[in-house]
Length: 163
Figure 1 (cartoon, rainbow, N blue to C red):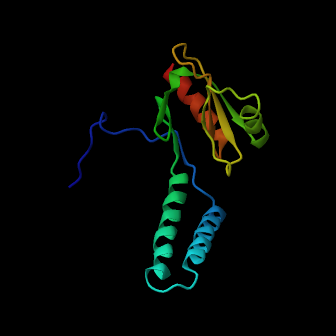
Figure 2 (figure 1 turned 120 degrees about the vertical axis):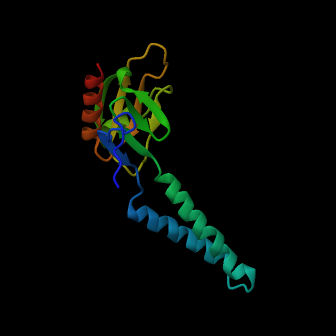
C-alpha cells in the first residue's frame, strides 16, 4: 500500500549538498598515530595495560576523526545551512568562489574578526558569502568547499529565486 504525502510535508531536495569529510590519508595518519601512542603506553606490559590503551585510544581516534568530518553544507530554496548555522538566502549580497590562494588572502593577515568561518585545511577551495543584513554585524561567511563554483552558483540561484 503506497501513501502519498501532501506537498507541504515533503521538503524539496537541496539545490546543493556536500559533506566536508576527511581524506583517506588523514584517517590513516590519525589511526597510525593513535596506534603508535597505544603501543608506547603498552610497552610489553601484561594485564589491563596490554589491551586498555588500544581499547581506549583507537575508538577515541575514530570518534575524533569522524567528528572532524561531520560538517554538512546545503543550499535549499530558503537558506544556506552550514552544520547547525542557518543563513536565509535573502541576506546574501554575493557569493564568490575562492581557490586556495583566494581563501588564504581572505583568511590571512587582513581577515575580518567578525566573519563567520567554517574552514577545513585539507580542502583547498572555499566560498565567500557577502551579507546584506543591517541587523547583523557579520560582514561575510567563508565556507570550505570541494566544489566552490557549484556552491556559489547554487547560492546565487536560490537568492535570485527567493526575490
